[in-house]
Length: 317
Image 1 (cartoon, rainbow, N blue to C red):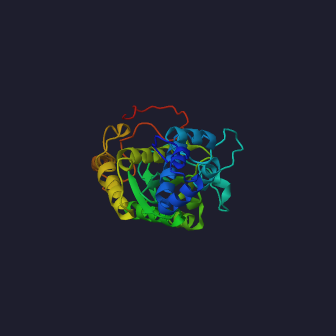
Image 2 (cartoon, rainbow, N blue to C red; image 1 turned 60 degrees about the horizontal axis):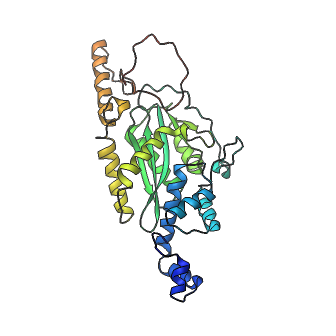
């Protein structure tokens, strides 16, 4: 119970009702909404600090007015894969909980200089009033554009594949593109891997317990939660899908300015890439249009890059 002046014990004593009877009656009436609210509070606190254990989460929940038994808290965190990441090298994560192949991290040292060279993917949850739904996205690192997305009630490989298919239909990349993700079962499953291999896409996965390997996707999810999800109360799946889709396509891709793109939106940046490529081809007398390289370079990179001697001018910031 949240925000009460009196504790549950005091309320029950004043009404001469046992706490066990109170909880049985209350859970029969509002079990789903209470469960979703508590899970949302737990996920918000756990994702803020992935090294925060269930005992500290319990204390933080108590400060916010939630009374959650430590056994129930541990169960909920285990079910939602929110148990803290240990700082030792032999940390056990869900990476080893599935039988699928784990691929090496090929994206760490990639120097991206065009679109359709490196895609990153990620999954997050979105809270409705009585349930959670899940969003999968695929983002082009060079332009920061979300090129594919899908929403589902089920946290399985099916909706991750739908996001991938939408990205492939939108971009139609040449073979050799690197697809980077975490080691979750959605991305390691045969169904997902077969889609990647059928299109000549190279598979890359993050190191265990290292969120920095997927920083651009994590950054987008933070932007989505801050600028769209946190200020909304979606009625149902259809309402959430419509609103989130509008944010991705019309706000984030078309309007939101990125300092790393010289304060252009992803779509504006890609249009400048295409324009620069046409101008370069015309000047060189080459009619072939290039769609993956240009003189524009977003500042910085998601991944650590090796030092190189540079004889060219500095990139745009």
